[in-house]
Amino acid sequence: MDEACRNCPALCETRTQVVHGYGDVGADFLFVGERPTARADETGVPFAGAGGSDGDGGLRRMLERLGLCAVDSPAERPELENVYLTTLTRCRDPERGPTDEEVDNCEPFLNAEIRMINPEILVPVGERTLAELGTEYTTTPVDDLTLPEDHAQRIRGRGFELVPMIDPRDQTDDQTQAWLEAFVELMASDYRQTKGRRER
Image (cartoon, rainbow, N blue to C red; front, top):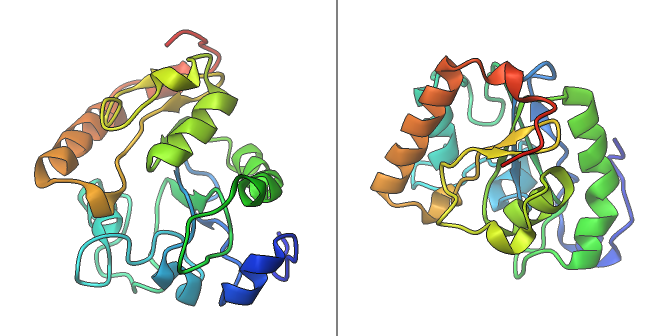
């Protein structure tokens, strides 16, 4: 992974650092966001500070509740088990989301991480990420993949199962609870049999 990537000149001027993936490289669960958060740009850890007002973020609290993140681990270096975190793009502009060209420029990094981790479950976080991963990894027409309709739903893909999530910063308490309950049920199931299925 290139720590000094210059593929997107505009983002090179606004980023603090390149934020590549972070977590358990043998994970079954891979969470993919759209771009680094402001806190991730500072710490180098994807999703840092994503949601909530306590600095740890809504996603971290969700991972703690699922037993995938050690509760007492430091915010800047959370101890993750069976989960890997990454984003479509590796650099942040504080004023805007990534352009299509910037997403395309980062696609080799994301593809390399997905091949390296070889997860069973992909968790697209947010509408943009769902569209990108849905196009690449499912046979479902991208127009049929939407949030909040597909929040906490299991979508069969090509070699993976997708469990989309509304961005933690935008979730209601009920939506958070619904996603957690669906994911607990998934974790208790024989989800490792999903690879190779092509139907939704």
